[in-house]
Image (cartoon, rainbow, N blue to C red):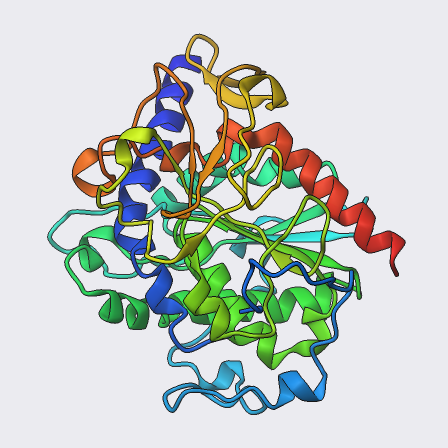
Length: 382
């Protein structure tokens, strides 16, 4: 039984890693009509809490194809939102034990190559739900020490449906039932579960694409929620300077404990330099997940507080030190890791040394402490 569970976990991890490559290539596209902070190279002071209701933000011009933030509602979306009053449509509804919540979106967990497979799965798709629960154990749990983690099930793209589409086509494809579900879940969460608490947005892979869409649309339409956002962690795909410039009310993290910011990175080995990686876009930004710096200061193995690794003998996760280091490649906008004896993502899709599937697990303990630091900073400033 333990061996079968371990094999399912490992299969799930690689399933979303492979599937994510197609979905994540839309990262830049999905934000082409949104808004970022000023250039991250400037050393300006930022307030711990931001006001998005300012005249400056209200005057942000939208591209012609973008919906007006003042009138955008769920009703504008095609399709019928899933019913989040039903507890079975939630992967996780926690007991409230913290002052801050996390709204977490799992990565790609729907892969069906059968001839009659649906392009977008139903919300109760058993394969997706089983995989989502397993991935949550390696990702969503990192937020549990400091926050109450809410995680909705949401309808997902079938990897075989979107594998060959362009970035623009994929962007539009992701804004169908997938976006409708995520927005409906957010509506229900804020109206019934949140009770005015600060919150974190988090995801990986397809979940991070949806998180990015939420930042670029939903939060602009709901400044009353956005002002309570402690941070957003759309990890494992590119946040670009271009996208941030298009979304001036959004700010990328500058350190270990600033709040109201986006925290993101992509992880690679040195051998990926100059190689095509479908999750790495031009002009990308990453933050070092060990020392939380934006420069190329090296963070050694000894500074890593611990990686969360699956023990193949027991089928359980363990915290192991000394596995991963981190240094930013400033030109490529990624985290370079020199970990040894690791499994890389498929070279044909990510390049010869992509560590995309390790974005969370390699830096698990540092991320857990970082969430704690940002939460404490936000609460002290209230």
